Image (cartoon, rainbow, N blue to C red; front, side, top):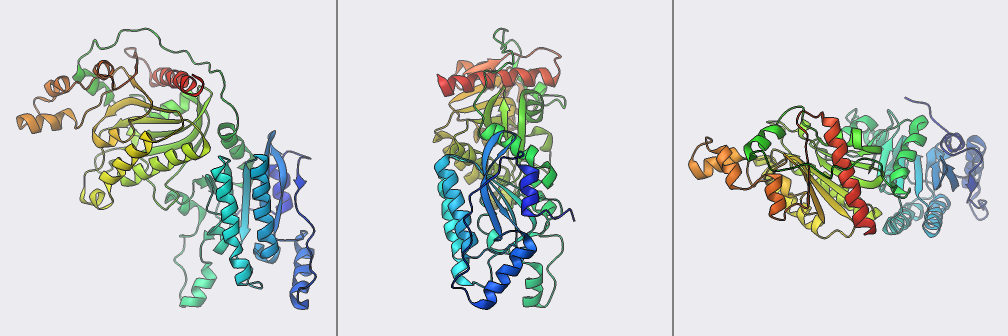
Length: 475
């Protein structure tokens, strides 16, 4: 287990030196029964704090934030009425002042000494946070060891970005309580930070020492304004001189540029999000907060390198995509969708998990978004899985990208009864980027250079996307 940080130590570690300004009022212990008052006084002496939560305003690498930090040494970080009201008040003040909120939890949950009156205060904390999110303001969560119970089931699980410290116990029901209730131990490993990240419950594992860097990256996208951009656009170059089948074959090459190349070479300040945050993760889709050519955005990209026979893009991947769409809309960030897929999963399991419905919901969400949206057909654009990320306000394609209802081989089987006519079907169906441009499906084609490395094409695409986002945002 990593070091257990106190609330004061964490504030000193994460916030810029000398910037913390407490928002907390003195705790009034009058009217409490003697036994509970004595316990609170002892807890304060042990913890060095007057309650289980400290709140206030500070700066992280020069950016102002509101902070809410648990102190576990104060009655196991439990949340009573005073602590709950302190959290809700801090969140509402942050909303009024237009500040992002950074919360760091370490708690056993509701304070049992106060029972139901404290327990129901979690609702008011959640209401304040949803008002904060509705105002388009970021909420970042760092789960420390341990975070359980009502804290995890309310303000610990409502972040736009949620990470946990290495090895942290994070769960709804504490394992000791489970064993006491059921007479058997909780299955080991389930409530560990690394497992929750792997299963798509949280976005990642971040040590407290690395938290300032993560917050800096996230806020550089969520708070900082767009920049002028510096990447060179490709404004000339003839397209449409190669056959449709040649384009299809080029997009299937292993060395072909993918979404990872786009983020590696055309983006800065990337924070990758993992999973739906509802316990589902599919690596065939990437969701990230980033800046493409200095334009802050949410990227939802199909990762061709993770798609293979037996591991096609399934319903969970599309649910991850919709999470990215919701984040963009809620935070007022542009959305960039990257299409590069040989097709969605075709299986009984995919049918039972609503693959068709998820495609439909992605299309419906994209067509109703109010923030700037750009879709990029980067390589393969096959079937409903590609269509799910297509209907943006502006659609860009690389020269050899293509879009079709089925792979050309499948179309050949339907029309001719064999795969021998795949090249012919690709031409007849007008799948090429040049044809898509002529037919009004895409708005711009990025020329490609024979033999160019993936990096160069990725930079060219990022430059074009950046230019299109500037046009949509300010034009």
